[in-house]
Image 1 (spheres, rainbow, N blue to C red):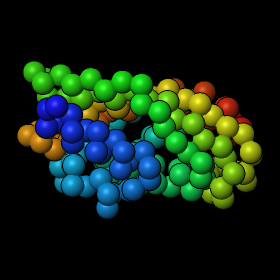
Image 2: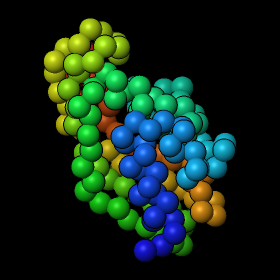
Image 3: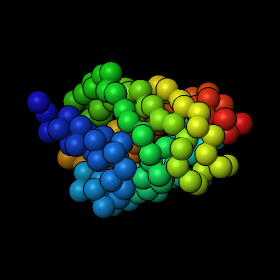
Image 4: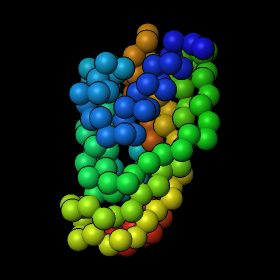
Length: 138
């Protein structure tokens, strides 16, 4: 297994289980960028802020969990793409409204771009509108 694949898998686990920056920073460049074409993530431009957003999301969706569908490494372009399905139910406090008791099952992809052995930028591909609707937030 390549080094960037190992780093990507470790980062993915730390991020998706709500470890926040404390658990994720060892896998990332200090100034790692973040982008997504999703309204729920508007304004988040650093990977540090994104992993903290995920940490917060798991207080709102305390049963939040993921299922990895695919990990693909492109050594030539120095990136790793991870495809997963996130599931969770809004039973925790916080978020845009009181707990709705509604659930989501939403597909997403992370594309982690590497500089050396650290993630320099991550793009999230996600249909946030569907997830927000399923959770009763829209």
